[in-house]
Amino acid sequence: MAPRLERFVSPGKGNGLRATAGVRRGELLFSAEPLASCVSNRVRGDVCHRCFTRRETLLRCSQCKTARYCNITCQKQAWSVHKRECKCLRGLLPRVPTDSVRLAARLIFALCQSRRENLTSMSEQKKQGLSQLASMLELYLRQEAPDLAQEMTSSLPPSCREPLSLIAKVTCNCFTVSDGELQEIGVGLYPSLSLLNHDCRPNCVMVFEGTKLQLRAVRDIKPEEELTISYIETLSLTEDRQRQLEEQYHFTCHCQRCDSQDKDGLMLSGEEATWRLLKEALPRLEEQKAESRWEALIKSCSHFLSTVGDDLPDENLYKLRLTDMALDASVHLGHWEEAVRYGEKTLPVYRQYYPDPHPVHGVQLMRVGKLQHYLEHIADALDTFKQAFQIIKLTHGDDHPLTADLLMKMEECRSELDQKSSSSH
Image 1 (spheres, rainbow, N blue to C red):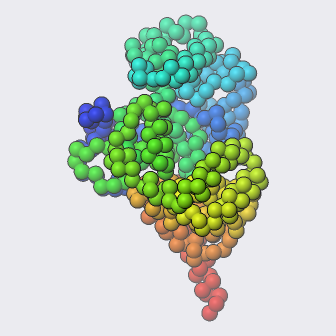
Image 2 (image 1 turned 180 degrees about the horizontal axis):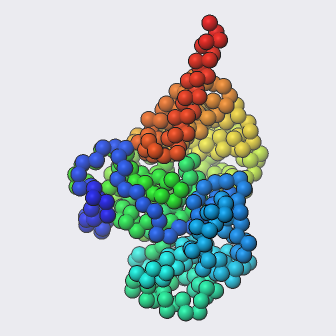
Image 3 (image 1 turned 120 degrees about the horizontal axis):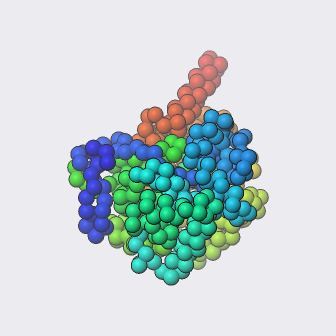
């Protein structure tokens, strides 16, 4: 554990982490590589399975046809981990193991090589789902070696020796690994940070550089104050946040934001009959987005947004979600003027819903700034990039590639404004 963090018993929560000294917002509290990690099945084949870098062209493992790498160097460096998994993947074809099964197996491989959840609260449906994953894990591992079960028994702690228990612990304690634009690229196990408890307005955030996890403070933290993160995306209603936490993590959140239902009134602003129209349309629109049906999505979003018009304030949660979807669709279709119009409408709303520095807010500002820059709205772009920098420098730090990219964009804008000023004189 890092010197500035210590384990303690958090009242009503169990184990937690707290600061041993005062911490200023933006400070790096902890950095760690995963004990085990894997690229998510939901990711397109453009992410290296060793360094988690996005590339247009990747080398594919000639044996399992699943693992992909930047180059021969990455492939060789990954072989010590991949060689056992490779046999398992080949043996399971044409079936594909879930992320949690692959991650649990990689954990077992790591522990075996080095030699070195509570199920009672789950619903029957959840247990059945985990039991199916556990069965797949046993089948998956059988391809590697018939005596691996014995290795597993001797290498893992007693509480993890049953596949069902191991899957449950992996599912509840893994972290989603995201890229610089907060798109999911994989999952990883970071044991030291699994002690962090949840809060819907946390004082820390986690960002990634490849698979390296960085924990940073987003508010000033007092000595012995508990460190918290959000396990879920917090831009949602209290009822929805609590339901998601209960389903995924099996606890009821009693943080200050949940108890006060802070922001719920703002999120549901406007006439209920009007916003219900958007709420009921969301599942179909999310399906269109998941299937990359961008033409259908932009048509649907445009129709609903024009229908509600100014009858719903921009702060309404469902209107915001449709506006974000319209932005995504416009970007994918290359409709840049529409994209920047939708993006600019979201920024004042994001500012209200993210009072503390947050990567989601910073990345949204960067995204809109890049659109403004592309359309040669240079002064607007520079202003948007400056706002993004005030957030990103705290959530990501000075050395993160995203911060470097942002500084470069700001410098490009200044240079272009200087050229325009010079040519006008």
